Image (tube, rainbow, N blue to C red; front, top):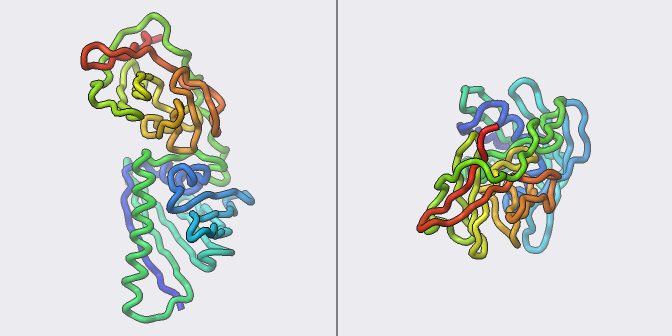
Length: 276
């Protein structure tokens, strides 16, 4: 006996971005450590990937699942849990291109469930609550994407095509980026100026300003946490020193540009380099 649960949601990002999200396994331990755990790719074959998922610890146990995920172009994805936890569960996904948004229709097949009528609403609530929580975590970090191996059958995405700019020199102009009272320790604010996003942090009483986008796949650094003088990208866990933007761990191997920053009165000002 099996129960089928249909789940619908609209995501405020375009189709290609949402499609790549389904195959971005690198981000699980950064974005979903308490809901999905970790994943390790075992096999990539055409439009099919097989991966091992290590679920978050529960009562001291770390349960595992081996899952198969297949892309059926242009807009369907099939997931089958083959071994371990949730064995036999299947998910069929249909992505609907709505321009700047994407509609998602998923059917969860939950096997070996008694056919009691009162049980169906309970299973539905559990599935919907779990799916909603996962999407909320993704949207909180601007829906990360671009992890390896990417959408099967396509070239894996790499670093952005444009080089990471060097730290700003003595030119440019000063702009008001934030109010000091709004910057808690470890907190950040972003400002767009000169065609770039700049994030400003206060950490242990000092101010730092870096380009907001991670050179790995463009993650928003302002949404990441700060640990020991380093900002951790919320998408795939790359780490950069706040002091000089150098990479300190994770998948990124290039630096992030830094910018002079100072406080004047109650305002925090950043020097933005002049346009090239």
